Image 1 (cartoon, rainbow, N blue to C red):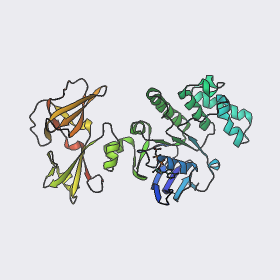
Image 2: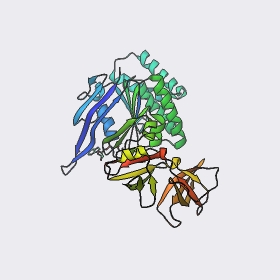
Image 3: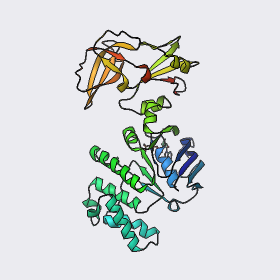
Image 4: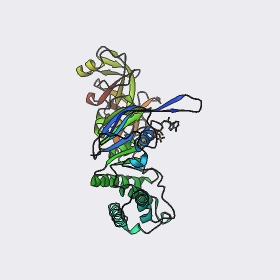
Length: 368
Ligand code: ATP
């Protein structure tokens, strides 16, 4: 069983002037056998360092990493049954696809040639590249080279795959095609996989579960939909979703939230949730805002706004709305692309109460 457990894993680097950099801050995450976990977060949040510690390419300052229940901290990388795929393909230019894929097995195992050949051919079938086996890297496209790099990991039949932004050198179309294909391959093989990306769309579409990191700290682990619908805090709420969630600083005054732009009525549930909070941040996703032309606003959860800018996004428009005509202080709503909407138009924006998120302004933790 290849269950991978990270238990309070910490990594502290020391920089040139002797001060500590906490790259990974007590991260605990449990990846079940066969699961696909995506580790996602902004640049510098500690994703690669986490992956490198699992691979054994970086020492662990504190905490434990277990594979199949046994600690692997202290084991040499080559003794861990783990294969890593990087952003750069790092293929040997003078070797054919077949040689690039078999080289590692020939060097580090005493496996019989026939078995190596069989593994290479099976991996080539899985990756749909059997016709490329006798070509050299210079005769392959970027996408094909990335498949060979994956093949090199697959032939090892490891217990765990670690992938560090493996698709980021590919163009957008190929990247989305490879995402689907990687998922299929991972499902076919059933190999526990940790996949690192800074791209929240990639994380949302690929992971069984996603683990969101910021500043070395784990913010939330959950299915993509859990993280989208019930973000644990302000950071996750703003990181997941495109365009990003709108946030408004507010104070609680009786049964209302008061911002410098508008007041919002609190439901009984919300009142309970915000009790004791000094300041509250109200969050609402662009896709949850209802935009209608028939003003003026007549309900407490509706606001009169003016369209500042309309950005087409294919089948939808991102519509930037201000509370006053000349305001640059706007928030964004998404509106179906079939509907005509123009800058300067007056519209009513409604924030439905079941789509409103509330966060503690000081800690950022979700309250509701
Ligand atoms: P990116 O998406 O940009 O690759 P990341 O999330 O993978 O970023 P890491 O590469 O893990 O982030 O880096 C985490 C933090 O640790 C950063 O602040 C980085 O500067 C620091 N760091 C990484 N490696 C070292 C090192 N060898 N020495 C000192 N600091 C390091």
